[in-house]
Structure formats: structure tokens, C-alpha cells
Length: 199
Image (cartoon, rainbow, N blue to C red; front, side, top):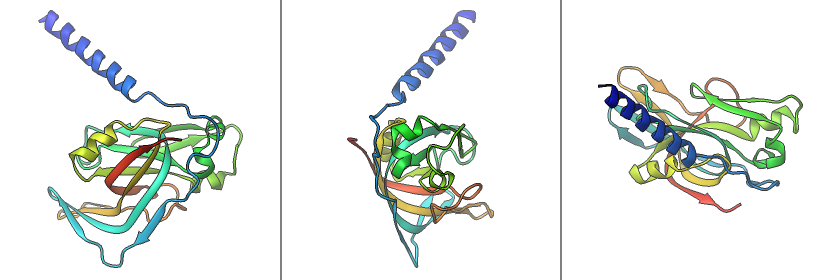
């Protein structure tokens, strides 16, 4: 029994090390990597997509090129199957290594947090040039690609901003603007395609 427990512990340790290595951060050279704002086309009449007992209603077409500031995987909880990963993304000067070196970034509980000792750029620019986005993969291939995304990479993704709801009254609405902060400011992104771009 003890040998079995030791073997299981060793396996978990190896899996943790493999996950850490696979997601190790990249460190691009200084400079703005993603100059353009996210592109969004609001929809007057969104389509409905069914994911088990969850209905996704498309609110806007969404296209973004951004630097991955942080990633957080979720494997437990009612929403983990629908949204297995959150990506904190930055564009404009929030994609510049020199700026990000002066900002501490973390994720927890479906939120993205940042802290500075001294602002390298104005506070409002940090708030409007970065966001925590909840990723809903459209299919298993997109899910596999999301699992490989690393902090520091420049990615391009296309899909839809969506609201999620269930018949029991549960709902989770997407943010429709990059100007908001706090609870409700995260985007729910139904990801149809994702690719890693060269800086």
C-alpha cells in the first residue's frame, strides 16, 4: 500500500512538473507586440448554441491579437467543463515587455489582478488595454490549442462574445466593452480559432 501511495505521489509530481514546463513563460524583446485594439461587431440578433444544458447566445463577433499576460486553468467546479481556461490578455503598451516588467500580474477565482509600485503607464491605460477573458473552446481541437498557450506569447483568436444561461436561472453574461473593471468586466469568448503569432 505504501509503495502504491509513493508511486501515485511520484506520478502527480511528474505531471505537475510537465505542466509547469509546458506552460513556462516566454520573454519577448521590448516593444509593443499587439498594436491594434480588439475588433468587435455587435449582433442585433444573436444565434443560440447548446453546450449540454447550457445555452450560449452570441452577442458580438470578436477578433483579437494580444499578448498573454497570464493563464489560469480550471478543472473543478460547475463551470470548468464549459470554461477550462482564463487568459489575461494585453494589447497596446500592455503588450510591451518593458512596461510589463513593472507590473505584477496574477489570476485567481476567475479574476485578473495587477499591482504596481509605480505606474509605468497611466492606470486607465492598464485598465483599458488588458482584460481577463473566459475561453470557451468551440471544439476539441481548439481546446487542445488553448491548453498549449503560454504566458508571453502573441496570439490571435476569433470567435464570439457570448452570454451563458441554464433553464434553472443560472446565467453568466459577457462584458461588451474593454472600458469596464471589476465584477462583470470579463469577456466570455466562444473561440472558433486560435493561433500563435511571431512577435
